[in-house]
Length: 308
Length: 258
Image 1 (tube, helix red, strand yellow):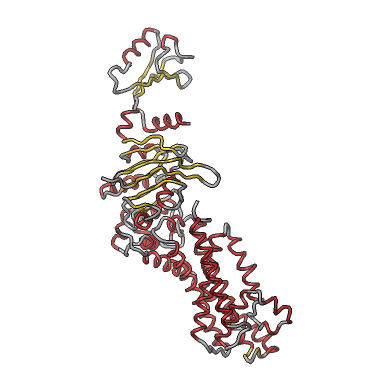
Image 2 (tube, one colour):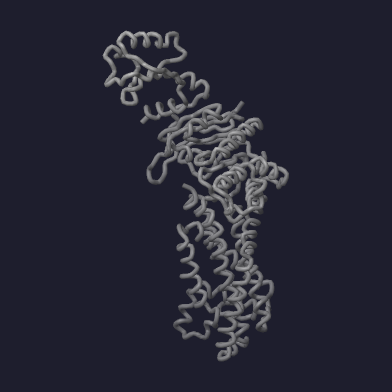
């Protein structure tokens, strides 16, 4: 099946000379939930802007369901809903009017029943005729999402959807994304909250300095790069790693009170039993031990750190 | 394909939203021009008119009606259209317009159409107010409407450009208050330029607003400071220049897209 979004050799050079996107290639499948991770200023928002039409690209080509976003912009844009990072609304309008406006702007016939359903889904029904200026920040963000969904898009871009929102909204947002997935809507979300990507995404892309550093299936990525960690709480602090342990991938933390060991969980020999015996031999006692799995966050920090 | 060749529903959505914006400030939108016009009639019509009496065979109070309508039409067209596009730029809500399946021509038609509709409405309100106070007659109703509409469109286009250009609220206000209002006052809104000494009369002919007011006044009383053809030609030229500038703006994304 052809990809829903195809980004080929897209470069964006701002007038200041800053290269925000450096020959980016990316394909996103229909119905996929794709998380684009990256530190601030990595190019996430610029990439979304290029796909949606609010930023003009310097070079490259973007297709949405086969429609070129520059040449066939009407067909391409009609399929896309965008929720930007910043709240930007006509604050004097009411919630329902703002949604009706967005639906019309994107070329769709009025459908009050659909708008009503959306208002219920986003817990905005009680506020439907309230002026946006009177809403709380969290409610305004819900209105932003409602507007983006008001024309029944096939693709939804969520730029930092849960930055600075409360727990309720974050939970609702995740539920919403799952519901959209069941309706075969393609969702692209940018975030620097790794847990968000871990929770929702099918695939993860990492962007840094305007380049896609890595794209992989989330599960595969975790498997491939996922390491486990053994942490030992020591009885007495160690001033430095004993020379008998040279060559082991060990780190001393917490003023020498904690020793951590990274190992490949899938390997035949994890090295854990050998390490524990060795510690016993050289007289390093510990009072507690704990193992944990590497999170996407560790992977991310690792990748971005390496690229920098 | 879901998108049609012309996004009429998008144009209508903007047009309607812009008119709804006026509804929210209906008192200010209608009461302000009515009160201002009434004040002008008291000051210029009653106080000064008592001394001038007639200009070219028309009572002074009636003579200033076209100029007064033009004064409001120009400033209202500019402010309506400039705020309509500047405000979304200011709040960031313009992202939606830029990412919508809407051509730049459609966007201009919607915003300029709405701004012109509003200022024509205000022009008509002033005309009705004036007709209650002084003996107004309209010799060429078709041309009166034509001049009203063309001028509203021309200055709404101009306002739209100002709204895109403006980087802050001060810049938004500077052209209407420092350029357009003085030019209107000096453009024969309250006098015929025939009443001026020859030198100032010649200088006045470089004032574009003279042509607008003259043509408009001709449609009322059958006489103007310059020929009707010159008035029409100037209005058409002004529209053409604005459209040229807007074409360039949308092609380059100037002040709209990074």
